[in-house]
Length: 335
Length: 231
Image (cartoon, rainbow over all chains, first blue to last red; front, side, top):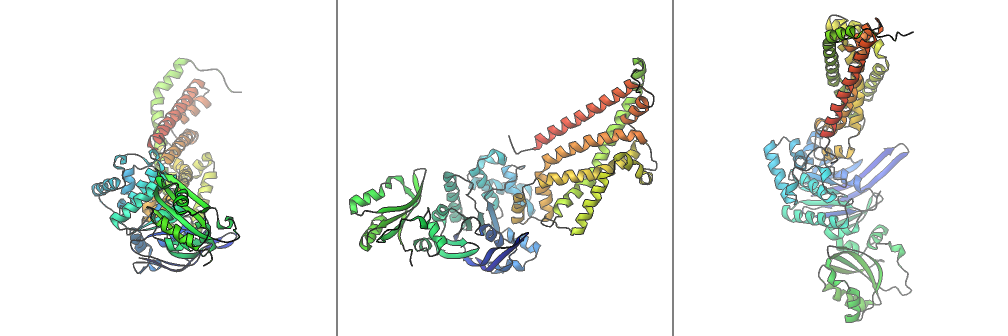
């Protein structure tokens, strides 16, 4: 369990001080896939670096399984960091080492014998689906393959927590999806706690169980993904829920009921969903906003619909509830 | 007015065949030994210059870092020919005499190690700071970060820079012939400059050019072979 309490981080720069984080508190339970989402500059990267103390917080505490990391000495901290692995947007593979040797790197640091380390590395290559890349150098791999190697390396020391710092931001949608699937699979197989920070709504929707929205250095909303996104309260959350920005939503004279539909790998056969709903249920939904990607024949993303009244809304929700791999919920902007 | 007349070919050949094998050996010996010793001193110093910075992996007191930088700049700004004369007392102390090939190694090392420290510094600065952060996130010690990430990742760049160093030191070795050092430089000066034997001087210069070419070729080859970044 990761408990962050009252965390603040202030940077001193040549032109004054910058408050990157302001009194952030959140708890990540064991086995969570926890998302921290925010625009660039919101403080996400600083927050994730405060969790393994790559950045020392100015104020507040970080506890992992009850142990206060800020109270540890550098050598003690190094031991704890083996339990908290990290993957990065830019993969950060060592260019002069083969993939196998990259995975051996964290094991080498703790003095594991070469043969044992290599055996473990081969297991991990198998686990991430790249057993044939042992002797390849990073420059010979695609972005997705590099991230797989980085994940294998992060898992080498059997960590309890995996921190993902914009781990899919440099990847195309298909590869992003593949990496997220791998993370989910590893989560199920190893029971590892995953904390990922991202600016991509689709990443949170696809994989996370809980989410915190970080805006301008503060956590503005926190909770299970469905409840945060079905009733976004803060401006930051509303901006995330409506892909083109909620300010852009057309003003209707008689504000109707809004329904947010999240596609989680919905089969493309479901596609004429709105048309089907109109024909079968006679519900005429207005599409206010949509951001949907098609990845290997499956739909990911979200859409905001508007229907006339409470009755239509209830019927539409009931209709949509029958669709597989799709979540629909009424959005209340004025709660 | 320089004398453009050449000595008889037979005379050139007599000196070249009689004295050059030893001179080539002395030049190589002084160059390689001086470079090796300068790397022994310059490499750790270069590492300290980068790792010792405020946000480096092994921060040093600011005054110490500044003192090191100052010392390097001073040694780098003294012309080599002056430096050779200045260090004669030290040379006597270390080698026992102030002339000969072995004696020339002392000023060569003193001139070359600050240069090498700067080259190492520039190589290490090319290492992606994200890699250092990655190593820290995995609990690497400062020493492990220096050896396994900073130095290891910059091997191709270090080889290129050491090649620059060895060719520069070769030039210094030749120059040391003017004040008592042995080797090709000494022959070029004593026969070519002092006795107007232009043929001998030309052969000495051509051999120096060939040595530079060979070092550079080997160095470039080794740097490329050791770089796994692009294929």
